[in-house]
Length: 112
Image 1 (cartoon, rainbow, N blue to C red):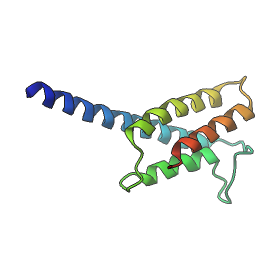
Image 2: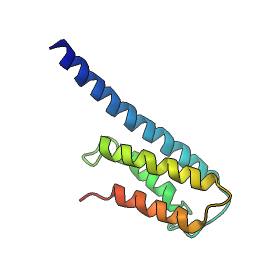
Image 3: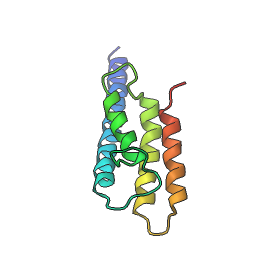
Image 4: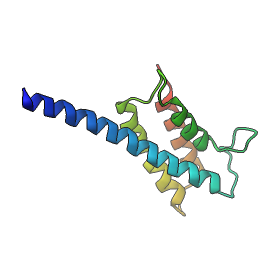
């Protein structure tokens, strides 16, 4: 009985930690995207936010709604956003790679 309570509490804390980690990484990416002086082909709105920045903002806006990011999505998104950050920081990555990763993130965010 005690063990099952501890396991449930651990799983709940793990989900919360995963979601919080994802939100922190996304917030950092948003700040990086907003501070960027370069405009790429991923810019899609009149306010000059990149698609990646829009995805971060949209994800944050979903918190507390019935469309909140699930722990499964958070795990997938964390991996994708870490890849995005790595590609964005790389001198050898191409814009095509970055755009493909953004499309992958969009696909993960799309509900079925």
